[in-house]
Length: 282
Image (cartoon, rainbow, N blue to C red; front, side):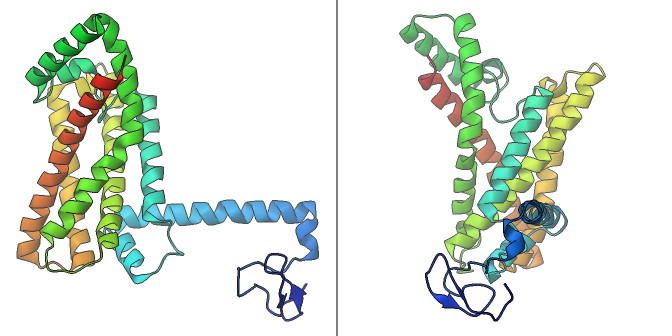
């Protein structure tokens, strides 16, 4: 069927004389659509379209910080996948990398909570009380806790996005941006941060391959953390200029506040995961 020839839209039940229905977007059915070749053609187009938008989105995320949020604000949605979709894909990549490398950044083990975190003394007291309630030992509880916190980290990671999205209008008070822009900016920033974490996990895996301790080494952990948040600060400096139009001097202060906020949110998320897992694991 050629454009311009009237056809009946199977969805709207109305006569249409264009290739696509103006009411619902349905396309005029062509004879080749019902052939095996037509099926494979549509399948190929679907995959290349999704892959193209995905690759374009990740390229913009890394090479042009702030471009995705600016495009979202301007209504340019077709060239890129949505902020939430991009965050979910980055999340999948992050946890797949964790599984492949055997390391964990956000959902750390109970041993790390007890001996390697700023709240270790509090964690020891809370764990002792919990073990007493469950009438069990740390040796029995630890494997259950470690498995549960890995699952919780995957399903609750969106919780880091929310406080950062709430922090943005405070830091950029007076810009009068809709909250949807702050939310999109936060989703894009954390997608970028998850990609940085993937690189850190890869470096850690290489270190382990050559006989190192990986993320169990405080020195390597500190170095990678400094690099990650340094890169995050550069991302924020560029992106906030694009999205919020922040001026150079004030932008530095705001970026430092946002970077410190992101670091605090990560620590807070780790502690929240500890509490949720401690009192939900049996």
